Image (tube, rainbow, N blue to C red):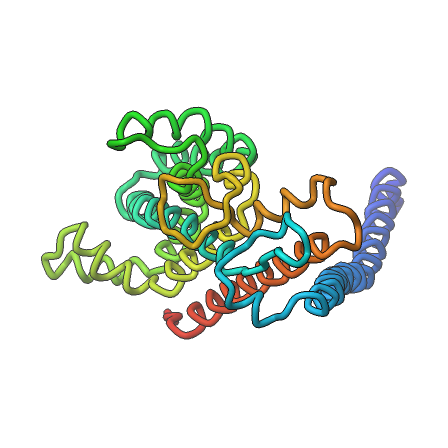
Length: 317
């Protein structure tokens, strides 16, 4: 029986191609873990390098300024002579927390409502239309948000608020930071709600509950860990925001809670000193590392809190 040379050749070529593909796959299987390990090690060493830099420069600052004064003094006036300078971080912390509180008042209800609508009410077609628009908000540069707060939101608030509002104030950047955080809270909360099994929704509807009651009393409590974690991550994002508060918030450190007046946050102070007017090796120069270390600890605590909440209240389905 004669062999067909064409079929015999095609079978041999297919076998060779299969062997070549398997050899390539085997090489990638061996290389992939090593590449991933290198990336993980780079991330770890980068984090350690940041912490080492902050710690060493912060210790230099505390050799010149008492840590007790830094933590308890309510006045922050570094741009004077060393004898008259005040380094009380509470003034900057109060400004940061004020902005964060305003932002969360705006972001939490709007972001949660958007998540409930996308998860429980919107059709697939509507969800595909709305969700990209929310993600566009997350992609807008923060400096654009800052100019939006300064040139649009502040004049608008000046017309609404009796007695007017300062050009640089806490209310305007706080509102805009909240707008910026909405996509984060909405997206993470919606993901948590979508993870709730449909059987729980169907059971509640079968018992006579309305769609709103199902969303509020069934789905939301079941997804509570993810929703609260999104809130905490949003707070962390608001604490670390820089350009919006630098442009629209002003540069007046104060512990007074007056949202219509100028304030200064920790990030805004770091930007102010980093512009190059301060000499290297001065106390003011080292103060930005102490402020940065405080900001790092705030953000770290928020992230740890988010992880704790996710693990503590996680529901297994």
